[in-house]
Image (cartoon, rainbow, N blue to C red; front, side, top):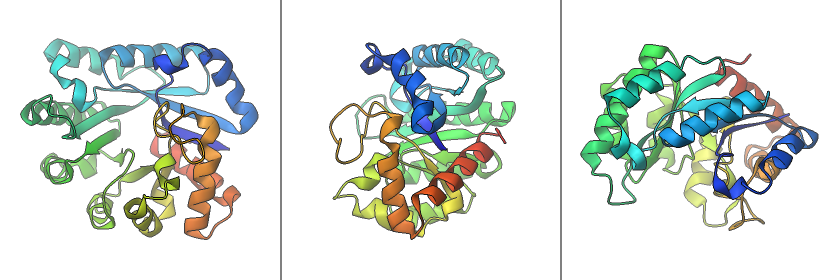
Length: 255
């Protein structure tokens, strides 16, 4: 069984065949999916998906690139919907300095607020951090994020940075990038990470693995990530599936 712990099936890339694709996942061994909010609208979409499909769970939150839309009323709304039965995390939240907007101070403010929300509602966090490792670590340390629990989504930093997150017993989301030939830094970090702290994810429709790189990603391509991780860890594909399945269930409180 495979657990796709981070997907965006509400994306318009799935508009033509969303229902058909999602209903086909179980026949390919994909037994659970967490659809992740990245804005207020995509969080609303996520809530609808998790109601429609028994195997789809939801994370509610606002991605750093969308934080300019946030205000106190919307934070109250996020708190309200976080109490729905199949909501399993606050996310994706964090910092993204790849783009110039929004201003880093705006991103930091709402990152802190959403970390505080997660603590209040007792849910783990899904952290998005891009070109912002030190600020991410500094804020998480200040907010005692180790007490909240979470996953570093689409981990892309060095093994040294991974060790810093490991101090808080965080999980690490590993997806299609692991199969890329130029992903030396990630492969070094993944090789060192405890297998009990790795979650499989797609971030679909983005970041499809080889040999599908550049195409629309989906959970159907996770076996490529499983194979790459198995080779890296010296385990069988079945062992990787079993371990990461239990990791996902444990992290999201679904055991």
